[in-house]
Image 1 (cartoon, rainbow, N blue to C red):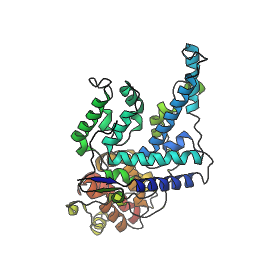
Image 2: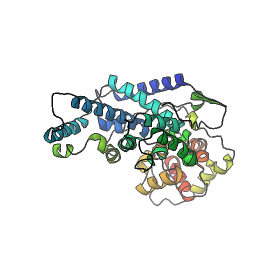
Image 3: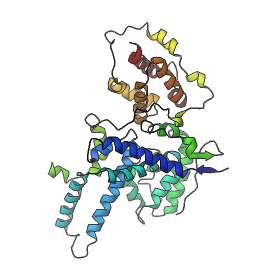
Image 4: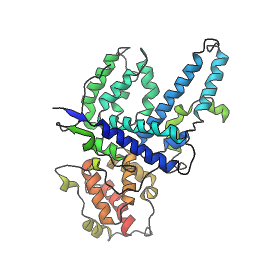
Length: 370
């Protein structure tokens, strides 16, 4: 029983993905800011891996300054001035296409590796930590891990592991075995890449076993600005800037995301009949709600967005956004329901008569039929 990874497919996919994103963004702009990166694609993990790499480069720049033997960087006034300078610098990210594209390509590769093999990915992350500083490393980097983060964040501030790297590696593998059934589906995570370019999971992983779950341990104001860095605030900026930030770059491909084609045996339990739904919803009184709806994402109330994310999309806001954008591209209610059946209902185990499911389907109905 072996699993083969097609690294050539992964590299080609990441190259194409990054070229599409950069081509569209830089067609109208000369450079990209930090806030642009936070909102760059529908895959939060891809965006945050770019920022994680910038954080590493930022730290390297600081270490380079401190390595100069002719100046006393331990002096308190020097330390304070240097901290303020580095924090202000972090908020002046300005990247042109030739610098961004390789960063994005690597981020896409890392996101796919994390989605499909979280154990090996996180174990490799541990091996990057400076000797004796694994816990500090995890504290600094945990905000950049958006997928399968339960496999590693439980280690932060855990007593008993000390400085023993092998203990951390074994703990990740053991923890994964305990929680893997509660983690998000690989297909659903990779679906967030589909607005740019569909990812073919079958072309990437060739296996004899049902699930790709390797678990072996691998080889080893200005005043305000000065108080924190862009990297400290990146999670807050992600959530507060969605209303003002530009829409994520995306293509208008109608090609299906092959990775999320479900193969469940009880599909009838989750499949919806568009004619039956029409007959049911036509009898409802909309009390002034009739009219042409715009994009579905713009039509959700806050409580709906929270409910759909929590109850229907396993807490994954990126996946909800992807689903709404995919439905918006459909030409009819019948086509939209077919898409829901094929990509989401079975994979996510929707209960046909549950209130969240019915409210979601009613929203789709209003999009096309009201």
